[in-house]
Length: 303
Image 1 (cartoon, rainbow, N blue to C red):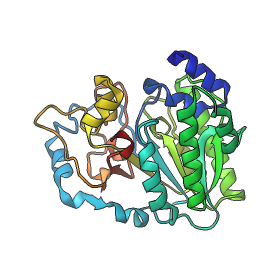
Image 2: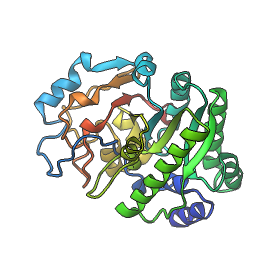
Image 3: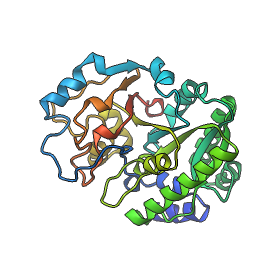
Image 4: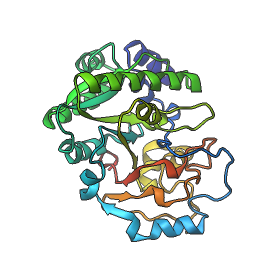
């Protein structure tokens, strides 16, 4: 089955989130943008800026994974920005680390069409050609149950071919309104794994999900999930361009690689220049200073 036919079939099954799973180039990774945007592209990059390299190499700007619960305390919704297909392995560790921080009626919000429940989506995809999608949906459901989280789908129907500002703004607005409604009715706190395209203002006119939630009075923390090993990412994606976009080290020349911790680490991204462009090799305007923080961890699913 071709990639295009897979996307169309996924859409017909109500899988606006999972249609992106099968198309790496429709899953743009980015960051939640809460700082003021300056759209002029700076010359410096994460690798060439001496000041920012110093921040990256300063041990004081890193925290152990055990600090994560304290750092998200008080947030109603934790937005975990992921790259679909590459960050499944993070979910188990993060659900276990963060589940205990969710107070009261705790929920898992899922980036799937809310016209069907998570269980209905699983049944819909449990047939030949979609086994991988169903497997990871089941994995998410099991993790949620183990942590006492009730699952809710919050996205709306969409076209995987339409990546316009207007379309993603519409989806983010609808998701924000649905999340706010659930927080008033069924949930006190929540976790949400969401594609990073929904947490970034990469083009003019964008108002991302994180901003929309905060405008509705919802307190959030946005966590950027980042695999620090560009070689692993290259092996998975099999394309140099994808490595440059997806990887921690993708934009750096040989001999100027960024620190790559062997154990999971939290990097305090706000220590960087707030207007430093995240991925200068693609035409986007995501800024490093927009992260609440970044989690650097090797995804076990890529081993």
